[in-house]
Length: 92
Image (spheres, rainbow, N blue to C red):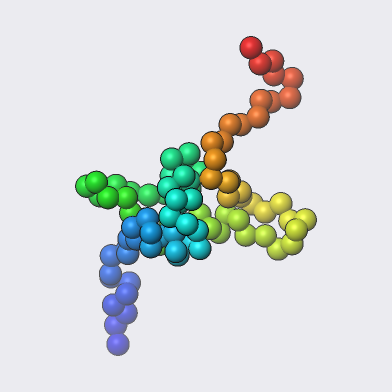
C-alpha cells in the first residue's frame, strides 16, 4: 500500500492550536512572536500560522539530558532579548 502521508502538504496550526501543541498559553506564543524568540511562523493573508515541523524544531532546541547539560540551543523566555555586550566593550 502506498504511503499517502508523504505526499500530503504540511499542516498549519493557528496560534491557539499551536500554543496547545506546545503546552503554552496563546498569549505567551504571541509574546514570543513579538519579541522574535519563538518558533518560525507564516502569514497567510491576515492569519498567523505555524507548521508543525517548525514548532517541533523550536521545542527541540530546549532538549537537555540533565540539569548540568548546557544543550545545543536555547529556548529564550517570552520577553525582549537584549544581548549582553562583549567583555571589554565599552558602552556609550
